[in-house]
Amino acid sequence: MDLVKLDKNSNGKFVCPKCKGELRKVEGGGVKIVDGKVDMEATQPRHICDECGTFYKELLHSGYYNVFDLPENERKSKKNLVDVKDIPPQQIKRESDGKAPCPRCGDRMDFVPAEPVKIVDGKPDFSNTMDHFKCSHCKSVFRKIAGTDFYQWSEK
Image (cartoon, rainbow, N blue to C red; front, side, top):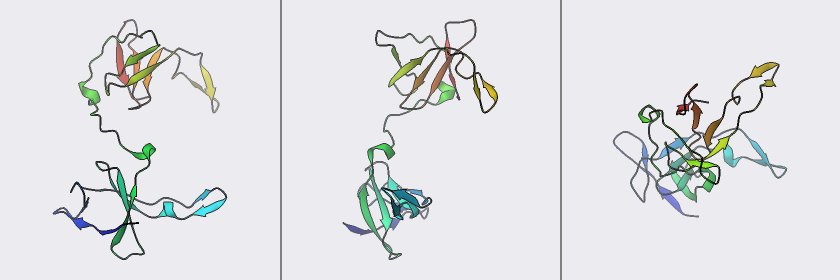
């Protein structure tokens, strides 16, 4: 375990000792049970460097921080996402594998066929009653504009 002292920038935010980028602070959460044991590690705040893929946790309020590698599932992608207001309605065609390129991130989107109306918590859910595309990478959804062959980004 390496211990480092983190420096602050002019805005009072911690900076990464490797790349000098500003660290993103994530507050600690509640106590979790992992493999039948109490996990107190999740309660401590972390300072994350998305550029280097590391995070820092303070050691016993000493001002020194342990360095850890950020798990893959918590890493932010370095792909640039197109802002949703910059995505015009467009035709999206399924390719032979049933997927299509995502207009927002460039990854592969899955085609989700229409389903009948479902009852969720006693209320009708119409969210999947029309064909749409869903990107597992950027979590974008593209729904068909009624009466056309064009798809548009949708919040849900």
